[in-house]
Length: 275
Ligand SMILES: C[S@@+](CC[C@H](N)C(=O)[O-])C[C@H]1O[C@@H](n2cnc3c(N)ncnc32)[C@H](O)[C@@H]1O
Image (cartoon, rainbow, N blue to C red; front, side, top):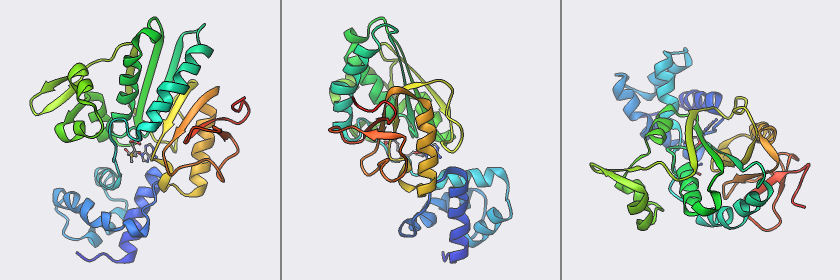
């Protein structure tokens, strides 16, 4: 399958237009492998033809299938364990103190892929059950991909997905076997909800105490990173915590957040800071 530079630009351009994700030229190989099933489903014989159909504003279904195929949903339970340890050991205890009157927590996992990140938070809160008894805790998972959100809602994982990061004790205590898959049970105090949401749009209403937006901004242009970070700043409580992925930072993109002096990847709205 040969792909002309023009066709590559048209296909990766669609992905960027819809989601903000740029396909670096080094990652263009993804086009060929990722789009093969889309071509098969739509009976299209070459990538150039697919690109031409997309460029001529082909059917919405075809454009959605192309975007879906090019998104990177890489994730795992407790991805980057040090971050979850910091949330459990530093961020949540501080919030338990500062919110002890209202006893309410709202957490948003933005770009949650197939749900392992919000469920890891739910598991973590369930492990601190006594601390959170009587609290109202909502965890919202969102992603631009309807397919990823559908799996997240089902909470159904293959053996391979389970093996990535989930301790066996938690698997046995918190999941039910469902054929060859494992289904997570509702966890303790936290209510988990999911929605399809594009980070290029306005954030969901209300203020969040913690926002995780990890491994999503990596491939945004500098301008888009700034826009999205500024939007996240408008959605977070003044003393809330933003958690970014390893490789991501607010530095050089926005003044709206201030990095934690010690905890990697944690930020607070600059107007309040870490005092
Ligand atoms: C690499 S995964 C990271 C998942 C999880 N946050 C983690 O760190 O394990 C990136 C996710 O961001 C989603 N995504 C990409 N662009 C997005 C956008 N504009 N709005 C919302 N989600 C987006 C993708 O669909 C994908 O599921």
